[in-house]
Image 1 (tube, rainbow, N blue to C red):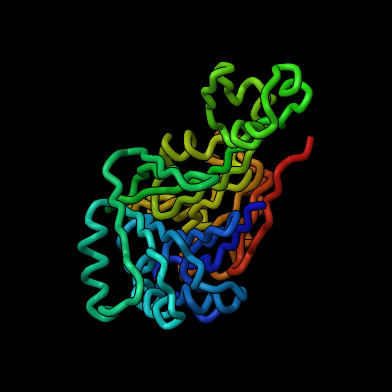
Image 2 (tube, rainbow, N blue to C red):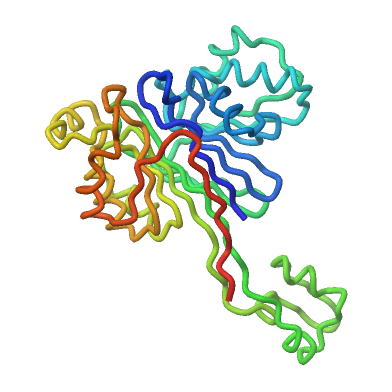
Length: 303
């Protein structure tokens, strides 16, 4: 099960009724935060989730509404007596930006490790899942992220027994290990069926529509995408400031064949996003104008 919570849905500045855009995901004991603008901690508290177990924080880019909440988040983690290392991921320059922000959070009881993205697309492997980063098109270097959980095929006891594979090797083969013994070499494909459908969540904000978004969001169970403007007449403004309209986001969702799309990162002037959704759903029916705290538990499909 992959737990997803869109902590906030605002762009540019936090509002009394809308925190800045931030996503939190939890899977198999690991917690991931994408973006950490001002107010992210409050949004997390309102949801009832804790920052202490966060293992990875990914930053799309270094505009204040996506990273200014980091010093306070680090201090909160330190005050909770965290000792485990924290991994930060983001575009080139991340180390310098974090060092600057840490002027007001200099002493922490845990190590901070920075990984700077340098390629148009990069994959970071973790235990049981991976994070895929991909470049998008904003007025500064900006990345989107996918959280991907692959799922191996079912273990076939009959095949394992027919192949004469000792039982003490079964769990290792199920984990993908190749085992070489005097009796021969045993490989996972000897005991596993075809890979089953996994889970995928794709997130992007602060960008014009790009082919990289379509490619990386392809087949996602959930696509969380910037919708800065719902007003059709603001298309030119979206182009000028390298943002997206609701309708452009819906077009990406349709092309990528995602199951569901949540809009986020609304302009402060956009008071009622739902007012524009009728036209958006003509493009992509399973589109939702997300509100702060919207969450879902994504489950593996059962055969």
